[in-house]
Image (cartoon, rainbow, N blue to C red; front, side, top):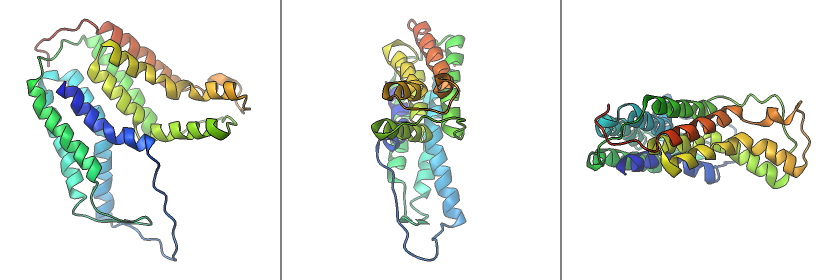
Length: 255
């Protein structure tokens, strides 16, 4: 249970960033305020640490389950430290001065505590090597989707709410929502929860072609297949197969 709570705590910033409206700031002046090099380094490190923590914890749980409490706490503690540094260094931008990534730091603290408490969980499950490799592939595909730039060669002519949700899904991908979903699925390994997480990856894969058909929108593609996110389709299929294969895993001293 505590392993799941640790990954869930690490995933909360990405989940909330995908559903809460982003900050927009006007600028009324002649000189654009810029953060110091130190502030950029500190806040970038804290941000990247928070983004990658769900993946790091999920991979630790998959490949080194017995060492998860120690390694997970170390990884979460590092992100907690980086978040703590943001309280010491102000970040100046057109939106004003920011000092302290409180929510990110709080989630890292919760993840650290959950990792330490994971010692109380029952013994780690024996995860077949093929299942471990499958969920690792799902994580890598989701992470690649959030890190790579949009390389679409064609676009749908969606309007109104169809376009709004299309933009929201793009934003959710960039902030790591599907990485968080894949991480939760991989820590669940098998069962309905893991299957649901894998199936959820079909949302970014199929929304655009389905929305285009249902709304009757035009597009400049040679076919609707170009609008689908095929890597996510592959991730969903691999995840479902892995979850079904892992239904009967048993406690063991693996890792």
